Image (cartoon, rainbow, N blue to C red; front, side):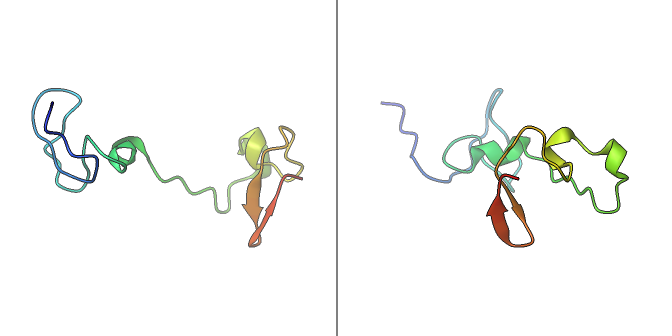
Length: 71
């Protein structure tokens, strides 16, 4: 047994552990250490990634004006 809980807990120690109290290296929220919010508001259309273009070439599901669409 490792005595690691399957829940949110802060875990210090060697990589990939963290001492940052805002996130944890184990449990369901551990992925949040690697997430970075990005805003494309007022970005020119030609600079947007394909998945965010108005015509959505890859056909990915996304939320647009509060509706989940893939077009």
